Length: 267
Picture 1 (cartoon, rainbow, N blue to C red):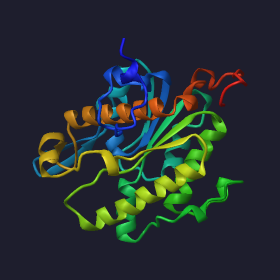
Picture 2 (picture 1 turned 120 degrees about the vertical axis):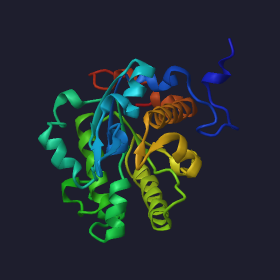
Picture 3 (picture 1 turned 180 degrees about the vertical axis):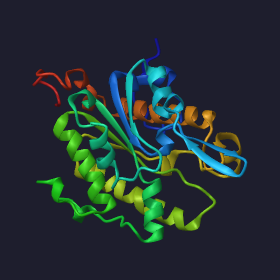
């Protein structure tokens, strides 16, 4: 048996290889996806001059990931969601109850926040906006709200792993691209600030969302079914890559959420 496919390769980049059946992403067994319409499987309709937006969670990349790995995947997402509006939705839908304790959380927020940055009604902020001793005191910026989400779920499930997603590059809007770079920089800084956080750097490693990509994987302003399927493959393959390159970080994932651990190993 060739184990090289299941261990680190110093010459490999995160999305060089697509994982089979979700790869090691399947070790978590219960995962939550926090995001906006692009995490909700939203399709965009247009009929008789009227445009409609329809969250179809069964087509979300999270549910494709669930079927690939055999894991339970919870969609804590909704079309139009920003970091600043997540807590309103979470309270409405009781997303802070014990049943939402997971071994992994994937956070894909920022697309709608960037619209706010451009329009001038919301600020990106910085890590200076974060009070690690009490994130309820964070400033009302993207950085402050995003950190508050991590802190809340770390409070609920202290040893869970968090995967923070940057936004892939596009070619059709210079202003959004500039903010996308700033967003990515902040995501890396947030991952460094909190324990058990890893970056899914789609801005650096995902395909550029250019005209050809849109033709194949988008339906107007949102992805089509193939686009959400492709996103699932990228997410699970990137997480598989992270696990293979940091096996000691994930050796005790089976103990997360239990009263047990092995003190002889990293915890």
